[in-house]
Every structure is written in C-alpha cells, then in structure tokens.
Image (tube, rainbow, N blue to C red; front, side, top):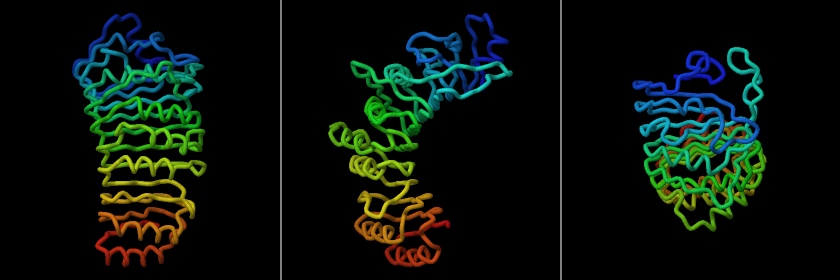
Length: 315
C-alpha cells in the first residue's frame, strides 16, 4: 500500500489520531521534510499508525520512527532526493528539499528494525550529515542483503561512516553503486579508512556487486573490500577498467561476472585469466563489455573450458 502525504492520506485521514492496518503486509510513504533533515521534528503523519502485520516498508525522504511501524519489518527501502518532485501529488506545488540525512537519525531508526533482512539505502541527491560525537552503532543481526547507492553529493567521509556505523555480522549480499561524485573519485581515501579498521565488516559476505563511474578509483576500494571478504564466492563488477590497474580475485571465488565494463581490454582479460588459475573459480560471465570482441570471447571460452571453467557471455 502506498499513500502520498500530500494527497490521499491528508484528505481521508485529516484528524484521525490513530489508524490501524492490521493485515497490511507492505507500506510505502512519500514525504518531504524541509531544508535540513530533521531529527525529532517534522510532519511524520504515519507516526500515528499501528501496523503490526507490516513486513515491508518503502519511503522517500522519510525515516522509519521508533516503535511506529511495528517490529516485524523484514524489508526496507529508503531513498532520499534533494528535490524529487516539481509538483506534489494531486497537482499541489512541492518545494520540499532534503539536503542532509543525519547519520545519528539513520542509525537510531535502523536499530529499531531488528527483524530486518533486506535493506536498501539510496542517497541520490543528498549527503550524510556526520555527528560529533560519532553516531551510535546500529546492530542488524538478521540482515542478509544490503544495497547502498551513493549519488552526486555523497562525500567519502560519509560513505565510510555509513559502512562502519552499521554492524551486519551475518550479511551475505552487498551491492554498492557509486555515481560521479566526490566519494567515487576518492575511493582511495575510503580504502585507507577500511584498511585501518580492525573490525571484520565483511567477514561473512558471500556475494558482492560493485557499480562505479568513470571518474572513480573503484579498483582500490574493491581491492580492500575483497581482502576483507574471505567467504566471498560471487563477485560482479560493472565499472570501467584501465590497462594498468590491479584487480584482485579472491581464492575461494566461484563466480566472476563482468557487466558493461567498457574499458576492459582483451590483454587485461587474459591477465585476469592467469589470476583465475590459482582460485576456485567455476564460472565466468562476460556481459556486454564492448572492447572484447566475439572472436576473442569464443577463444577464451575454449581456454576456460580446458581448465574446467564455464564461460557465459553476451556481446
């Protein structure tokens, strides 16, 4: 169920102090919150509702509040835009803007969702406001899958702060997308933070997917992430490749996928093949990598097959 705050909910529930949706399994809400993201104030109309059967929550420019959407939420998707609608629902003008999402608000909100198994956080046009002292740690013991999207405004400091402010001891799937932004261009600094960190952030990670832009130092970030992921078996890279950039293939990796890696050259792919020989790799996927010709991939398929490695490809 999806109720826009500027439309149907205000029209049909303008004065109700309390609303119950006892059998609603999913709920989404869209709401602006002002020039700066608020901590404990703002028109959170859904805070008056009790939904004990809720298992899925999706919000735009909102934060799930403590003890308000129930304790059974297993899937949560949160997305923030600085200005996501020129006009609100039902033709009403919308001037709401969010410039910052404060880390302390986010970690406190996530800490209340202890049944959470799948989480998506999309910072499309906002930055994360860092707190002094540091934000409280959100421990999500049941989380299995995490998707993080960092947009044009997200800083490297904020990216690292988020990755270390959420404890996910049983995380198995991680998808990170870095757009053309300060964070994407400064992956090296994030990597230095991770290298100095003594916690095993990705100890149980099984599947890692990274999308990065042309201007990012993604290979440096991925190298440190892979070093900290001893249990990784599935790796997907959707990013540019340079001839002289290093690439790490974890020893226990079983599936390696390259998708739309438009700068991945044939010589670089052959160097990666040599690295694969010292691993447990069983399957390689090459999908729409424009510098790899059909003829080259066909020959590579024969070479990999001789090593007992399956190649799946699409040009």
